[in-house]
Image (cartoon, rainbow over all chains, first blue to last red; front, side, top):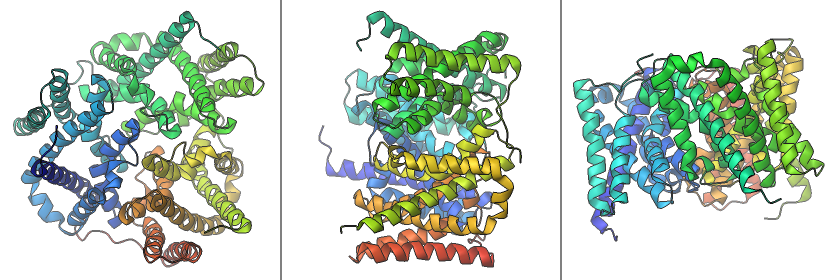
Length: 209
Length: 209
Length: 209
């Protein structure tokens, strides 16, 4: 399906915005933990780009997209600098940042899953790569400050990514056109994440834990 | 050497069984640490597949085998679900699980080393990739809950993998046929692991530590 | 530019020396933390080779160079053995080890950045890959013992790598010949690192941390 120039531009802008907001989450955590400027930039870069890098490395889509186009790295570094210099402002913007983070989560899950399908992966591995794209950066971000990654500890985060990727796998399996499926997948992940934060929903734990 | 259909089927079944048991080790640790369902599935997947993924990524054998064939991911996820729902049963099966884990260790060390040799690697890097295949999943599993990986802390685990891979490198260097060398390698790793657990053997520490 | 045999030999010797000294840092940390022989060899290998491996994996330069030539792995393992058997001696050699580590830092930053440029990466990602090559091993080394990586916590380490890579990007952009640019890049990183250790300089922290 040919993509119109406007749609492609919109997709790029949203992708860079998602990268920037993921970068803010990394930079903010680094400032809170008292890391130096390098630590802040490393955590913003890791949070913003590591998920997509892991996806591309596992698929063999190299050099990875996050390095082949400098704008992604630039977005991540600017986010790190913003957290370094304007930490109190970023903290005060917690709500809008959370909303954009939920949007980034949906976008990354959907684009990651779609890329895996385009590389000929089966539905199940494609779901995994959607989740890895969306949640992998947050996992590395938390590991770098020696903490158990948040996304493994109860919040509906990876589950929302899984829902978004699931919509793509389902729509693709049914042969539906890509644009509305993409919208539905991003929207589903976005809404599940937002609602779960508002209502304080947690992912289920084992009855034995 | 042509592989008969029966031998290939047996190899696949053993490989999937090893994957499943490695997945149990990840899921069980996640339940013990109170992670949610996503955390349990992530740890079972990481424990089961990360070693082979690392091997394939370092070799450039992409898309990695653990994603190209969905059955591996399925085995890892089923193991995670089993740990999530049936934790006490899995704990009670500690001994059989340990035996299958030792078998998986031997299998993964041998197949990992053989794949590296098939990609033209020298003996020393092939040994390393055998150990990475067998022990890499356990390393990531422990890192994800912010603990120093068990395999670095005294148990004869990676050493058993090294023995299995060493048998393959030696047999390959001597031009021996693949099937008996594979059996000998898996068996050597398996036995060393079992005996060391039974007798409480530890890997040596530095006189200075 | 054709490289004379002597220059190529010198480059290889320096590269292996840097690998060895990075390996010493990993092995020494492992002995201090009471890891077993496998843990010591894993940490020396991770510290020595993980940075270059990450660079090659992200670029798609596989099988990665650190495995394609066995001498790198050998240098890392010998360093681990030296730390295991001769820990007090290595500790007493703290100053020379630090000097060689600073040299390795400069070398790895420059060669990593140059390889990225040779793979057609833009300046910004090339800088990142220079820093990853030089500092990535130290990051993994510290993560494996569940500690927040030193290079994120204030020392002028990654910043020195960034300076060395920056000299390469600048010289390459200006079309200057490779040999003097390489020397200047290695020298700049080396000197900044040495001086910052002597004077106790720290990388800046956020005013808000």
